[in-house]
Image (cartoon, rainbow, N blue to C red):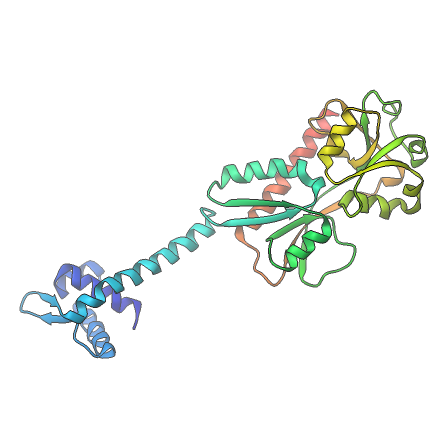
Length: 301
């Protein structure tokens, strides 16, 4: 049984004539007749009672008609659904990201949702270990983070942007007027650092190793915004992305001499799954948003 046969069958049933159905379908009447004959032979039953100027459905034909319409409608829905997916008019995108990317993500999500309002965008903020598990288990379509410390053969990575870690503090802090700091400068001061396992904390550990053990760390916090809120109300210092202070006029970021190497951010996806078109577009918007974000932040400094 072929879809065109069902299409011809419905056309004849609705028009009541082979000639009219062939005219509307832009197919020769003989081709329509041949396909209907083949369909009747395959089903082993007659579908139409042929009359001189018209046709009528047999009992089998009346039984087949709603089923044929349902099948043809389902096929049309398939084409429309795939077309909508390609045009980002429907679907769902699940992304996972580490907490530090929240400032970049804010702009990216707003831009994406504005441009593609019918695509449901779900964001999961987790640490790197949890995100890798979700990506491996295909629970998320895309993971945004720095490169994992060990290779994982199930994922591919696309470079997105980069940033540097800086000392973050209130503008009234005694160190706030310095143009650059060293870890030695930080030793007498109290620090709030990202919790171990978070991206920026891993970067701090990898760059300075044992020096961080000498710092006066008074608190570990898993949420970057929570750290920034604490800094605004105290003389504590943190080490975060230099761009974290955007829209935080009471805070400043000062480069740390030992942390000049940029931290690179990547989009990771499971290579056992085709990358969704919505994910490709999201990556493009992220790159554009992060570039604008950095440009505006530099202008504010």
